[in-house]
Amino acid sequence: MRTGEVHELVDRAAEVDASCTDCAVLAAAVADLRRLKSWVEGREVDLVQRIAEVSSFPEKSFAEAANTSLRNGGQVLERAQTAASVPELGASLADGRVSGDHVDVVTRTLRGLTPPLREQLIEEGERLAKIAERSTPDEFARSVRETARRLETASDGLDRLERQKRAIRFSSFIDKETGMGRWQATWDPETMVQLETKIDNQLQAMFHDRQPEGCPTDLLEKQSYLRALAVVALLDGHGGRSGKPEVIVVVDHTQPGPDGRPAVDWGLPVELPDRVLTDLWSRATTHSVTVRNGVVVDAGGQLDLGRSSRLPNRAQRRALRGLYSTCAIPGCVVRFSRTKLHHVVWWRRGGATDLANLLPLCEIHHQRVHHNGWLLTLTPGRTLTVALPDGQVMTTGPPKRSAA
Image 1: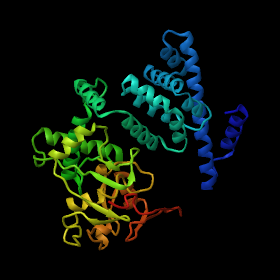
Image 2: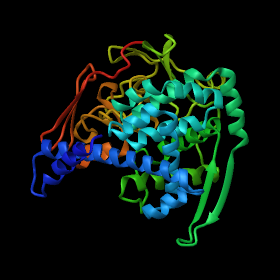
Image 3: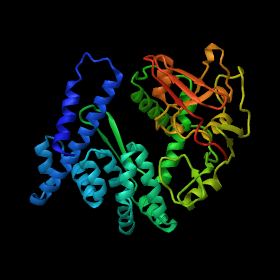
Image 4: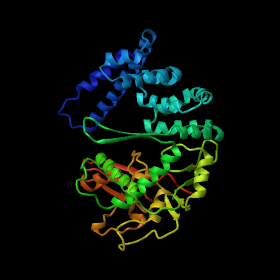
């Protein structure tokens, strides 16, 4: 980015004073600041690269100059190394077209690949840079994971999983400042899926429609608190039913993957080799969900409960998982397993527990609907309209899963 352009961005952002109430002007200023932040991160990368040429401990030299931690200094150094390895991405960062978070996505992915696969991913740098420029970091992370999966053979994947299983760790200690006990754990992806599934199921069973006394009011702290209670319940032997796990797998024939085959969404937050996923499928309880044009055609079980029950059943949750991979609010990336099923027409206002009246919402957006005046409207074809109190309106078409 030219110095003159940087000055223009600074001037435009500085011109917006505290009395401004024009949302478009404020949004434009935020966009200018985003580019400025990316440019600053690009300059940091350039400078830490130069420091590395003259310092035997560059992360420490950078951390002292930036008045930050050694850990942060190491992260910036890793970002610089990735930018140098993938120069197309580094150039986009220097020009303010992508952020440091985009570069960090590639850093994390490269770290988990074997050297030959790292080189193959780096060779796709130009394509990845173009994707990053038009994606959020979360969207870009999904694209990079798909690329890595395509490059990694089933054998390589299994070898990697075996390495990960040997690298599991668990430690516990007392925080001297708070006096609280703390755990630190690292699990391989397969074990992580099993643990996350048990905790999520326990969380739903204990706190679907209630919360205990003393629950934090901050939404993120609340989720952490409730998950901690769910873990304690599992360790005390008060967990839910044992037996086969339930895994909801969506096969989408209308959105093929890079190899031309139907896209398979396992709904898992980690990457697992195909053979492990197939084994998981064979040991789990399986259900099929057929979707067409944003509508569930067949899912099995009772999908309309009317006013007989306020709580949705498992069949309804499975059916909606066939339509949504995340919270239904546009742009939200909280995965489906962490959402609640919300009555679009509220239960206390006569709404029915029918599939057509249910929508997956994360904790934050669920609270905003109930307490911040967000108004949701859902058509029979599942086109969602979100009307906000300030007059903004967001509209989505039917969920992307249009047929199966």
